[in-house]
Amino acid sequence: MNRLIAAQGSYDLARFPADPRDTLRAWDASDEYLLRQLDGSAALDGTTAPPVDLAGEVVVLGDRWGALATALAGHRPVQISDSYLAQQATRANLTRNGIDRDAVRQLSSQDEPSARIDVLLVRVPKSLALLEDQLHRLAPAVHPDTVVIGTGMTTEIHTSTLKLFERIIGPTRTSLAVRKARLIHCTPDPALKPTPSPWPHSYELPSDIATGAAGLTVTNHAGVFSAERLDVGTRLLLQHLPSLPGPTRVVDLGCGNGVVGTAVAALAAEAEVTFVDESHQAIASARATFAAFAATTDPAPKAEFLLGDGLSDVPAGSVDLVLNNPPFHSHQATTDAIARRMFAGARAALRPGGELRVVGNRHLGYHATLRRMFGNCTTVASSPKFVVLSATKR
Image (cartoon, rainbow, N blue to C red; front, side, top):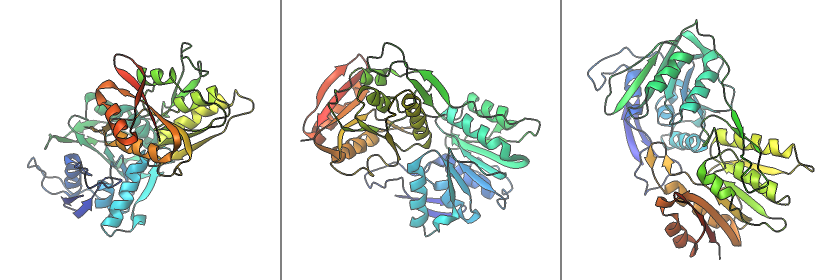
């Protein structure tokens, strides 16, 4: 936990779930820069600006761990996030600082946004596609007097980022960089006519996939991994799925667009598949991908979809197989913490004799982590870049 000291106050903040070993903060210099801009206090580059009127409808988009929503809770903002973990972090940080959780209204990236927005604050996401989708969804609520300010680290704000704001909202300029952070100032242009989001995208699995899912239609909502085509790692995993004799309970952990879990359902009609992810966009994608397959199958298979923190909501000792392609980035930070938590959750959820099958980049060294956690690990398949590993709960 760390303390954010801003013009709006001083706040104890942590990521979610809170881990005393985690050295990553729940905010960065771009959050601080935006809060100073809103308050009208002297910016770190020596410039000044009048305070922003926050009396109207304030929307905070993409707040990563709730730092912005917590600092602005007195203005009862609406927080829009794709991340379940970010939403839980916000709730925990509000409680941690003695603030009523109802002070912040939380919406997901799939929810209907506010009808009118007077102040739109955008924490620029890593995914340009997610930013495009969300700006399209919010543009109809923006009016000529709406204050629109984006923020991000200089490595996160590119010419393509600015062009999105310019094309969807209106004329855009950037601030000077301060502590490697930058602000985006955008003036709504009433001449721009809001258009529907171009997302989601769909594609078909290639015919050379060695599973019953060849030709399957895959749906990707904005921001979900592998939006245009099947990625190489997932392809390798699909080509080396285990045999599933009889009824089994399978979890597609970190399901993304749901292609792995749906492929299992295509291979094993008796399998009970649970799709798990912390992204609202991912769960919506997995639902659509599975629904397209189920519509072609008689009887239609059933599946469960869980938005949450890994396998924390799955009963211990209830799963036969967990399939996982873990991410190794938390926003801009490279970390194996997510994979380690996924592996630990899988071990708890698996029955004795149950299997965790993982695909990952060779250089990540997941085999060592799995041997330490499970006491065993075997290599199922490998390519020059990826490896499929199996660990069994004993």
